[in-house]
Length: 467
Ligand code: LLP
Image (cartoon, rainbow, N blue to C red; front, side, top):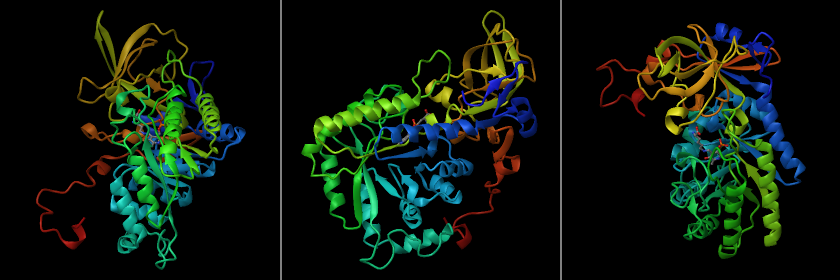
């Protein structure tokens, strides 16, 4: 896929750069992203929606991979950005991402996060619950202007940029969507399924919460309700869940207070294939099926089609990302198992341990040699569960081999940890034979940067230490 290929001598090349050269220059473990493939994915989604003739917005869910360069790339491609925390929002702002193209999600946005979002002027806030509605009311009413100004100053936003600021009465309205939990079960891992009734996210459609939320939002003059938002889960391969959610919503609409549904945000969730055996439709085909189905259902219900928004994360960056590891140890248990240990592991990819996610691997310098050995690829962390790949067929592996794991671009860097005090690896974007560093490898000094020597800081805190 994309611009990665194996040359005639069996060497992996990504974006026109040999993997071996990247590993040598930037060290291992290393995340390598095929920049052209990310751009292609963003364009393909936008093309599908354009061709479908709908009003649309595609926002990259940056939780899948949130770094400054990625936000810059998304900006260049004209897509929007979905953020879920002050940290992601700050990253976007640092990248010069246009705030009006930012969607702000989250089920427990703090006052400080909301203040940052409003001060920056984000395009839309997806309201998750009643407590958040009350917080937003206070902001809209001007009760939190001090906090708005303080947060704006802290992150260096221009004074007066503050979103709903200005004189009372002359305030800019805050655009919101309400997150709705439709009560459907997406066919995916329970940890990443979010549409079921008992979900921690959103207003429950079945129990009247949505009706109340609409009324309460309407009652706040400073809030402008633009529509509803649904996200049923992640790593999904069928349109059925999306369409079931839309059907539930359409069924419920007549029971809700009259609603000018300008926007329907259907979230992300399009799955990708990590190993050959997994059957997976192209994400664009899935998107097309969802859009066609949604159009049909609105037509059947005799309702005007709202703007359709999507927030893909994984399917934009997953397949574009590779992880390169160096093999450092091999343990043989004849007749039982052969362990190949690499220089990273669950600290750079928690997904196998957390979700049982499956990956494959190849030897980046000997990819064409016959795969005659079944091995388990394990990491270097002090846990038996630190298994990246349970079983993969490889050519006879030697110490020093470069092992490449494809389709590791989503929720890997984003979920990386310092477990065992491993510094986090570097990230490189490659394209047209050029390799550009986008995240530096952490150093040992980085690891201890926030450690405080015993006894140096204690209560009562001085002004400079106060949180
Ligand atoms: N929109 C909302 C509201 C979401 O909660 C999510 C993902 C997305 C969009 C993007 O979904 P995607 O297109 O990436 O599937 N850490 C897990 C995935 C958690 C997804 C959480 N929400 C994993 O590694 O599989």
